[in-house]
Image 1 (cartoon, rainbow, N blue to C red):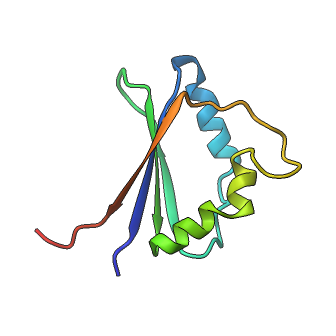
Image 2: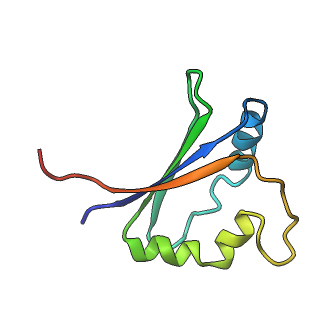
Length: 104
């Protein structure tokens, strides 16, 4: 079975990149036990770019969508009921979808 890969490309102002890293560090391990979740990586640019990549791997598209529509997702993104509203770090983001190619 091939993994479903989601990449969230987040454009971050130069003065906010440390905050993005801190927020992800604070949530480390919060996805453990989420059905279909295989893992994630946060990639920080090492050049003049200001786009960070959040790469997640899932067993299926359905698992990703179930998580995305869950209270866990809403809470972790400052949208949940009773959660303190956090100012977004990113100026914009794009969600890219991939699978691992088995050809070649």
